[in-house]
Amino acid sequence: MTDEEDRRRKGDERRHPSEKDESAMPRRAHDSGRVRAAIRNELEEVAEDSAAKEARQGAKPAQEQVITLENISLAFEEPILENVSFDAKAGETVVVVGESGTGKSTILKLLLRLLIPDKGRVLIDGEDIVGLTFDDALKVRQKMGMVFQGAALFDSMTVYENVAYPLREHTDLLEDEIEARVREKLQFVDLEPDKVIDQMPSELSGGMKKRVGIARGLANNPEIMLYDEPTSGLDPLTTATITYLIIKLQRELGVTSIVVSHDIRSSFRMASKIVLLANRHVEFFGTPEEMTGSDDSYIREFLGGF
Image 1 (tube, rainbow, N blue to C red):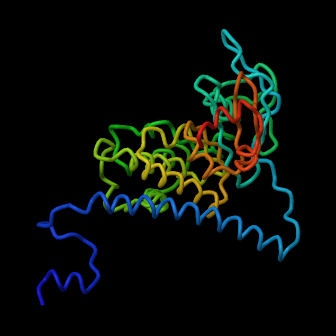
Image 2: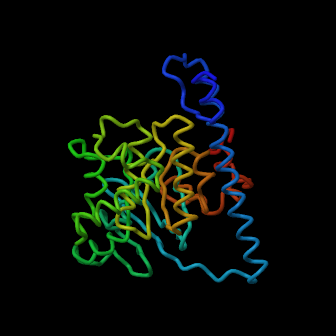
Image 3: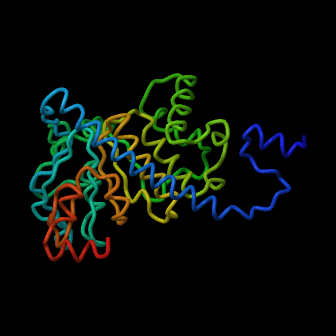
């Protein structure tokens, strides 16, 4: 038996170095279909699990509101937001969508208390953070993990140093504890620690950078995750991978997430609720199914051919 036949018999999926990569495109197409199917199955399983629990236990108890924006108004030279209200309950993923310039990223800055509204309240776990001192606001911010647009990794730091950064800044963990946490978070986002831990951001693909950014956001075990355009600039397969990770966070860790996105298809896959901003107001707040069923002319125009 030849070496090649032996590899095939053992089910070794690694390609022989001398082989041409003629099947690369079919493989990628197959992988793309597999990931999309996995996401659909994931969402179906969530619905089935929920229905099964309700059947066994009766009606589900009301979820606790983790994030509440209440009648928020904010203006700089011109009004940005006017009487904006919505909430996110424990374990929900709320996706904020809208045209460019409608104040989506401003929502994240308000939640991080990098901006203070002119009117209204921003509540985190029932506490209004608008009037907090800087030190108290910093404590609230420790409940949150942030994934920036483009991942925003420190170029001069390795993957390990990037993910460890918030742990060194905000915890008293020992170095071996930090390393264990870094490895745990990298594994959670489906990266092999031994392969990537010493790499620099410049050596990573766009999708890997995003996953390292998510790992860094998770480092402090936050109860809230904030994402600014997590799938921006990514190919469809990598977009599906990042979407799947956000769903995984919700299902396995019960994290409450606010996601700002232009990608409506990805948004509908991951969202428990959708917030549509338009003309400084909340044009719609509800489930993806409710949004697609709406007869509102602006909503239908916004969704286009989705």
